[in-house]
Image 1 (cartoon, one colour):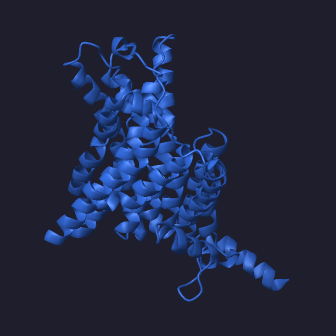
Image 2 (tube, one colour; image 1 turned 30 degrees about the horizontal axis):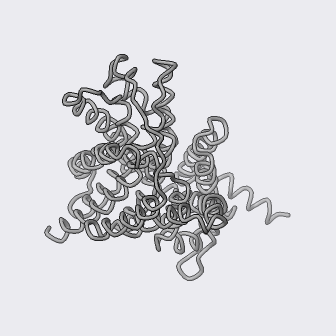
Image 3 (cartoon, one colour; image 1 turned 180 degrees about the horizontal axis):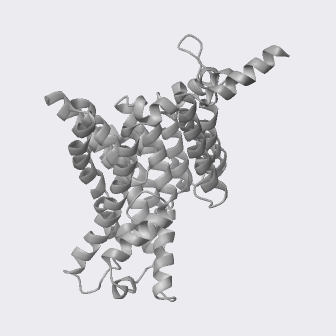
Length: 397
C-alpha cells in the first residue's frame, strides 16, 4: 500500500515541476483537439486519435508516460513501433493516398479540364510561405540547410494536405518538428470552413460571388477514366520523380475504382483501409507531441507560418481566377479558385455553401469539385517539386 501511495505522491508532485507544467499544457492542447473532433465535428477521425496520442505520451513517467508508450532504442514501445513502421518508412501517407484515390471521381475535371489550372494556382502559398519562412527561421536560431528543410515542410501545410506534409517532413528527417508540423497540417485542414470564407470575402465582391457557371454533365468514356491514372503517373514520374510514391499510390487507388472489376477492393480501400490507417496515423502523430519537443518557440512559428501558408494558398487561387476573368467574356466565379487546395471535398462544399448564401439558386459545386481534385494532384506535384528544389539548394550550399 505504501508503494502505491508513494507512486501517487510522485505523480502529483511531478505536476509541480517544469516538466509537469509542460505536460499539463499538452493535456490542454490535447483536450482542445478532442473537443474540436467531438463537439465541432472537425476531422474527428484524425483529431481525436491525435489528441489521445498526445495524452498518452505526456503522462508522468511514474504513470507510464512517454517511456512506456515510446519505449527506448533497445526496446521501443507500441507507438514508437508504429512511428518506425508507418512514418519513418513513409508507409502511412502512401496507404492513405491509395484510399483517397479510390474515393475520388475525376469525371467533373474531365468535363472541365480548364479547372486543372486552379489546382496549380492554389499552390502559390506553398512557395510564398517557403520564402517567408526562410526569412523568419534565422531570427529564432534555425539557419542554413536546416532552415531550408523546415521551410519546405511548413510551406506544404498551406496545401491542406496532411499526408504530403508528413511525407515531405519525414523525407527531410524533421522528426524533432513532426508534432507541430502534423498538428498544424491536420488542424488547419479541419478548419477549412472557418479559415477560407473570410479570406474569400475579403478578396471578392458579392457580385463576383454570385457569378453563375454552366456545367455539362456529358458522360466520360471509360477509356479516358482508365488511361488518366496511368498517364498522370508516367508524366509525374518523368517531370517530378520525387512525387511518384504519392502520385502513384493516388492513381493506383483511382485505377482500382475505375477499372470496374475490383469493386470489392475499391470499397475496402475507401472504407477499411482508410479507417484503419487513419486511426494508426492519428495516434502516431499524437505520439510526436511530447511536451519538451512541442512547447517551444519553433512550434509557435510553425503554427503561425502554416496558417499564413493556408491563407496564401486560398488567396492565390481566388486572385488567379480574378486575373483570368479580365480576359474572359464568360466569367468564372472567383470562389472556385479557393477550392484548388487539397482539402477534398471539404473546400468544394464550403464554396458551394458560400455561393448559395449569396444566391440561393447558384449551383457551382461540380466546378468546385473539379478544382478540388486538381488541388489534390497539385499539392502532391508541388511537394515533389519542393523536395527536389530544396535537395538541390542544400547540395549547392
